[in-house]
Amino acid sequence: MREIKTTDVTQAVKNLCIEANYSIGSDIKERIKHFSETEGSETGKEILSVILENYDLAEKERMAVCQDTGAAVFFVRIGQDVHITGGNFYNAINEGVRLGYEEGCLRKSIIKDPVFKRLNTKDNTPAIIHTRIVSGKELEITMMPKGSGAENMSEVRMLRANDGLKEIKSFVIEKIKVAGGKPCPPIIVGVGVGGNFERCAILSKIALLRETGKPNGDPNWAQVEKDLLEEINRLGIGPQGLGGTTTAIGVHILVEPCHIACLPVAVNIQCHANRHKTVKL
Amino acid sequence: MFISGVIYAMRDEAHKRFSYMIIKKEKLPFNLRGQVIYYVGPAPTPEGKVIGSAGPTSSYRMDPYTPQLLDKGLKATIGKGQRDKSVIDSMVKNKAVYLVAVGGAAVLISKTIKSSKVIAFNELGHEAVRELEVENFPCIVANDIYGNDIFIQGVNEWKR
Ligand code: SF4
Image 1 (cartoon, rainbow over the protein chains, first blue to last red):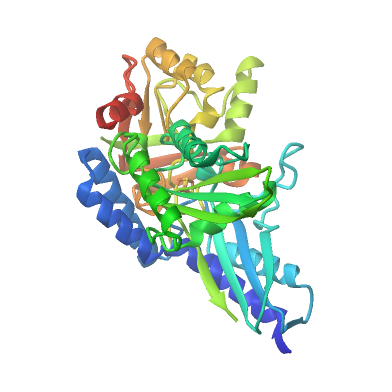
Image 2 (image 1 turned 45 degrees about the vertical axis):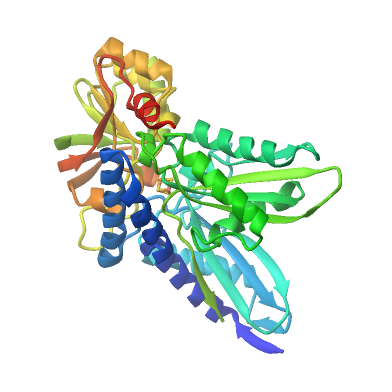
């Protein structure tokens, strides 16, 4: 058994919240640079360079890349030989969110009841925490501030078991077409296939954590990702939806087994500000 | 294009309240005639800065209220993403425009804001109404007074 103190968890979470919001991954920057070379629209090119400039400025000024610093989403992998001591683990994460969002001047966007009164909880808690028990004695915490502009364009759909690739693709394309400029394109498209109703939604979000543009490990799905990306970029939506050839900079599909009578598919749209940071304790 | 001068920051909840006040014929926190509204809910202001990160939020959520505000003389709105037909028609009728700023360019945009003052609904926090003084605030015309729509035209031009 390895002991990890909740105070260390809180400290780590606080730092994750701040760093994830201030600095964007180099994979995103590289992808945007790569696509701006081929972007056909002059306005589109200009927007991509503004986006890159903003990333650098955010890092330099130590400010949030985007004012929508999101809901605080966590993916936690807890080694089964870890023993958390000194209090409740979820409380420790929420305390880290509280401290990080305050110290980092990050916007608090969580409301207590989605319908009645809509009162802000004022500290961006509760966080949304997905935990998984894994082997080993490490604790891995990934923090993802998920803004709403892109999240609102996402959907879970139960396709018919035999619908196959054609329907999966047309579902993805339909979502992106309808979204247009709303999710701040260029976007990254997370797709969850399989599992069940709730599992495919989680898969579609985990898919966004993959290094942007890195192909799927399975050659069949790698081809699907490549085809979808090309098709999406032929839609003409372009940066911010004003027209162009860079609508998406990555399509990431995550697949899991599912019931014989099911084909659950989730599309989680992510804006270019695909922020996430991971720490191992 | 670049905007310099005074613009007003407000988003979802403030729009709901404005709409209610217009129906009730109450006095609004500022006179809409000839003004510009920027859809933004800024991040908290870091020490020594004028305002926190302050990029545009999605405009479509303000669509149900915008025609009412345009009828009161509002001249321009700034946000991101396409608008509903009812808003576009109202812009033609009222000779108003819709501008877009780059979503996710929040630090860059915050640098063009020279002062920020809450003028109404302070209790709403980042959703309060703010008077912003801006200098060379960068944006692009998306819908003009003739009903042109860059979202449709741009996509049609680049669709393959
Ligand atoms: S969609 Fe992303 S970039 Fe756009 S405002 Fe929301 S968080 Fe920011």
